[in-house]
Amino acid sequence: MPTAADAKLQYESGQTSYSMEKLTDIGDAITFESHAVLFSNANTKEPNVKPDGLASGGVVVQAISNTDDMIDVAALTCYLAGVKTTVPAAADETIVRATADAASISSITINSTGNVVIVKGTDSVDTNFSEVRDAAGGPPYIPVGSIEVGQVRTTSNAAAKIDPTEIFQVIGLHQERYNSPIWTINSQDALVVMDSALQDIHTGGTTKSVNASYADPLFSDIAKSENYVPSETSHTVNSKQIYGTTIGSAAKSLNQGTFTAYVEDGITDPLIKAKDDNLWFKFFPNRYKSDYILDQGLLGVSRTFPAGDSLAAACTISSTEAAVGVEA
Image (cartoon, rainbow, N blue to C red; front, side, top):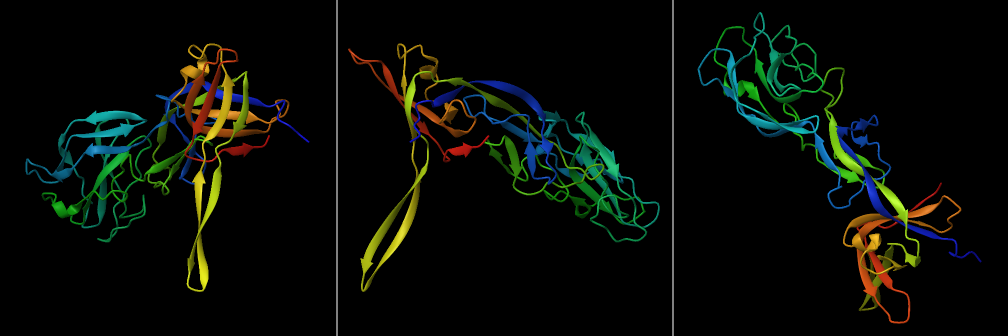
């Protein structure tokens, strides 16, 4: 019968940190990967995700100066390459109309240096708009590194004040916000997963960039440890007797992971100093093989100081997800 006599338990004792950088689209405009193997969620090391996009402000209006073919853009904040950027208000930005009465779309953008730039699309041959990027009568592609905050759509060639009905700022259609779509963080695979596909509205049919700073865990052995129990789901059944039969229901719950560590003084031990932090743990049933169980959660510690026995710490791993097995 196999035993765990040669087992090994490790904990997240440090991290390799990565500064804000652009993540890599795996090809579906939804899933973005990093350079890490795992995302650390230790205190101050949690992933900080900042896609490009508008954060606040940026309302586009008819020019207060009442000048024909001009707009004003309110002051705004946005994220560009992961950096929060403050852009001052811009007045009397020119909208270039078509050379004849025809549908023309101009995009109001913030470029990579934080300046308001008007990017004009290709004019239509009639007054019909298109929603296809770079098509005649459609909105233009946005330069890579820029964000779109709105669009102005005109059909007349005659100089005139820009009417409010010609200004469009619907999120996801005419405006890129940093927090739309929302995302989830997959710490086990070190991925950022968007709730829906990003729009391919940038030059070459590419999406805005998704940026993040994060940390990759480093592991150390818990040299004297035993009795590891993974964080796992358990199931219970409840039943109720009614007239002529019994009805039942099943419920699922997640148990805490546990292990015992033997410590030197229970005060200066690195593991003890890590208590209450959200850490990764690796358990190898056989230290001479590569398969392991991966567990993540808040480290809880209950120390005992017996007079005639080893100092011990009963440890808990309070997880939000069950431990998983990783095969080499």
